Length: 114
Image (tube, rainbow, N blue to C red):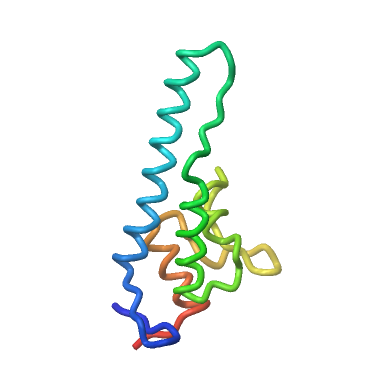
């Protein structure tokens, strides 16, 4: 299924998933590099090169899908918790454990289908 965003451009689920997987893979490579650096040095390293690119990609996705909650994608990517969206009464509304589920939630809450 395709969804229309303002300006007429289409954002597909496949495009969304590919972009989010690129971010996940990038962070995995950063962690691998950090482990290697830690083995070669006496100190504790923090590898953050390229984070500005990740931030820009997250901003682009957020704009493309008209996500009002600017922290939603960061929450999904970085918080090590159960990925459930709750209502005001703390009742589970959406299971967003997968990128498919996250995309479906975003489209239902922020997007319009064509």
